[in-house]
Length: 77
Image (cartoon, rainbow, N blue to C red; front, side):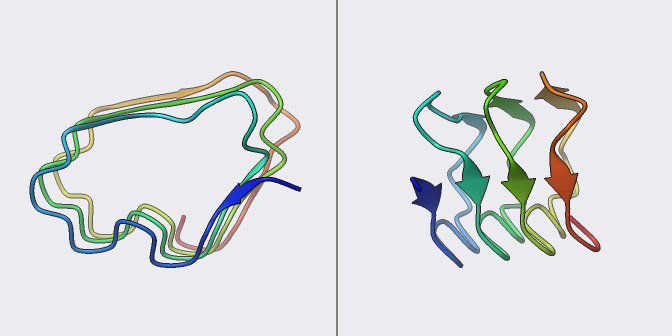
C-alpha cells in the first residue's frame, strides 16, 4: 500500500496545489491539515481512503477533485 503519511505536510503555509499521484491509494490522518494556503486538490481514481482530518483547517480550499465515489472518507476529512 502506498500512502501519504500522517502529518506529511501539516501546517505548510506555502502549499497551494496538490496533485496526488495515481500510485497513492491512501492519504493519512491530518496529512494536509492546516495548510492555510491550499486551494486545490486532485486525487486519483484508485484512492481508497482519506484519513481523519486530512484536510481540516484548509480554510482556502476551493477545488477538490475526487475521481471515485468508492473512496472511504474519514471524520472531519
